[in-house]
Image (cartoon, rainbow, N blue to C red; front, side, top):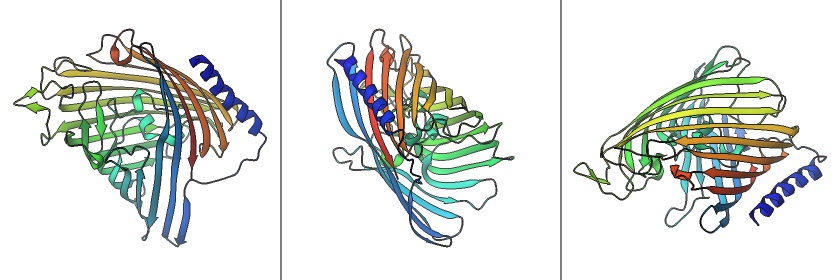
Length: 393
């Protein structure tokens, strides 16, 4: 039954693509400018991602659901030259008393020649995959290297600077200093924003930065090769986070409460990433490594062993436009290892993307993901199906 479902999903996307290949491509821009007068403007937009997700574990019953993976409107505007403000919220994860989650919320100054300064809730400059918008991903879900549940910082409250140098911005950089939270969990290293915090979040400060080299001109943070021009990039990044000891609710007199959610004392992270775009082929690869310590140095559970872990993530993703700018076949491989794991957790993905209108604006995606040794447990396997319809305006 499960394999039949996979077949139907792939065939549906493929047939839709073949039927619609001959239809005209309409040009649309993300966001709609509803007012403009000189330097003054107001723009509105958003993304809607409706997703079907099925889980089929090796042991246990298969489950599935249909839900809004992301339902994010935004408003952006300016009253003064070089100054812009933006706020975006997500209603796709509404549950219990949490009816919305604040995402981007910042003011931005663009008056410097080689820098753009952002103050507010924005992404820390770490992980190429995380910095690539969810609406511009090849696989339906991000891999380990871009997932805030596994060491990559999320949007955080602070000061962020980005910019570029040399002809065509062949060198780009990013810097961040911010207040950042961690949702304690022995199975994860889950960074979260202090804007949408729970009462047990560990609080602290993060400083980080990145630099990327683009030998053929800037390769922006977007997956898939639509232009078919040669582009390439290689980047490195790092960060350090330290608990300010203001909210260690899981530790009493230096001893963890044993509930499987140990307070985290510190985290350092390192990334090296690369990407290539050429003649319809798109390849992204990334490795990141995190060293994390718990407040109680004796915690041995989940990813932690004796109060510490070296969490390593690796991912490579590739796509090829079998019908240029219209239909793309994709595949990916990712792995994760940690001191507390008995075996390496791996995922292998294959999928198909169909682009209805202008690149990622309107697309249908299907991904089949095979997970082995989930959470580092030998023999704990999980197969998943993701089908997602996206509309961006």
